[in-house]
Image (cartoon, rainbow, N blue to C red; front, side, top):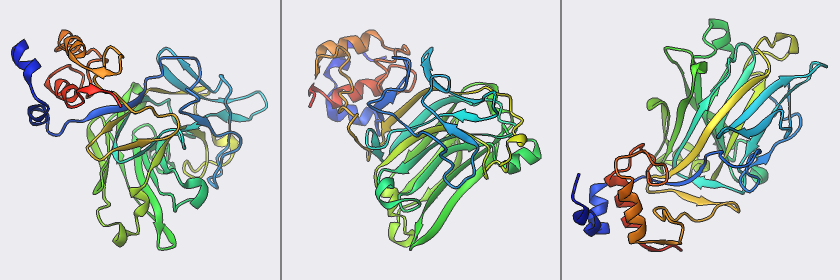
Length: 334
């Protein structure tokens, strides 16, 4: 650990050398406030949002189907006394969009077998004007596919896929991986890394797939160089699951899909926008709209800890990388 005086005298240039590249958290929803998703960030899709997938649920904003509790977002799929399935789906369209960046969510899925279909994904923010697939789609995670149900691997088979318009037609690329143990055993971290040259997805740091987007003209993939918004939902049945008859749903209900947090990190290319986004002042630990010596004192006081306020890069430890980020933003916040 370098001396106190040396740390304070580090210049932004030296800081960049210490942390190359620095990845700063630029947005997050930790789901620690209120009892419902933040309406400045999230909107609800309501009703029978089957999207041609022949899904069986109605989406609601009822607290029985979606709530914020105990530091997490909880989406609950239910079957009512009349046999109707309900669940929830929320999105950040227009309110929080990102072009490029690293996106992470810590998620616990329910037992999916058989008929539940959780997803964490993105659509191009121009979806309302250009439609699908011209808006582009990036599925970071979806599970519950029919083939996994048939092979007894429902809670271990993960799909990650991109969809887009190819010269007026439809194109997709993705991978399915089967992990060694059931994923409904606890929380797991799902990550998207999106740069101008590639899209990559991961589960618990293990790669799922990669897609080259460096030649958007050649692949007709300009959708992946425009802003996208986030979606979280838990569907019941549908073509993906191979179950379109309500009688075929055997998963235990109610079933909870729990999201601990969603975070976006700047990977050097990231553009964040939307009506609900406030420009970050990463490193302003005392919230005075200025990154100065007082903030450095707080950061150094948290050194080597897992203090989430001072852990600016989200690595789990307050260290030189966080110091470099703070020094890189030195001065008044814009």
